[in-house]
Image (cartoon, rainbow, N blue to C red; front, side):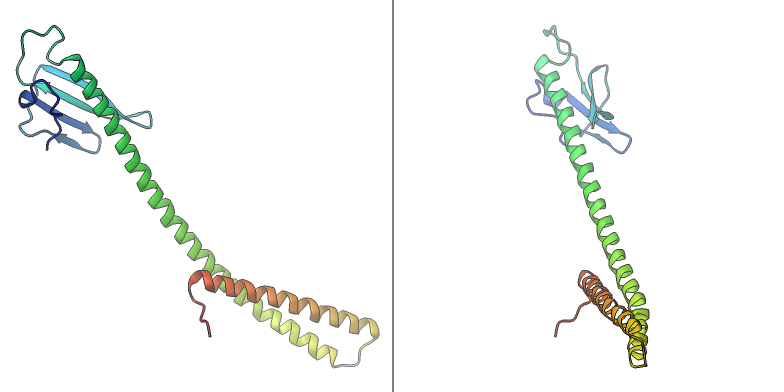
Length: 178
């Protein structure tokens, strides 16, 4: 695995490890030494892991330690970018999971609406049938108005139930066009 930036002063003498609770990745020929630089990798302001960079040999002539200040800044920036990449990956996974959950909920809703529409439509047809039979009998003027009101309201309700059933069939992909 190549994770040592070529901008390092001595890339061939540098070893690197990225660790977290989920993963541990090391550079080729990884070796832990006392000459090191460590920085945290944060995801959504929480500690996710750590970037560790080791110098395999001590280099004289630098008063900044085994890594130049520019190298330390580079490693810090690399850790920050790793954290952002992990955060984006986690957010993407959450979005996919939320989308799948929404699709399952939508299918469940459609099945429920189809079942309930059917279960409500059957008794509604019975009510309309009985109102029609009742209207064929000898009724007073008031009873005739009541029967007409039952019949008119029942037809409106049955139309609404049929529309809901059609909509649920469309959502469930079960409608057949003629």
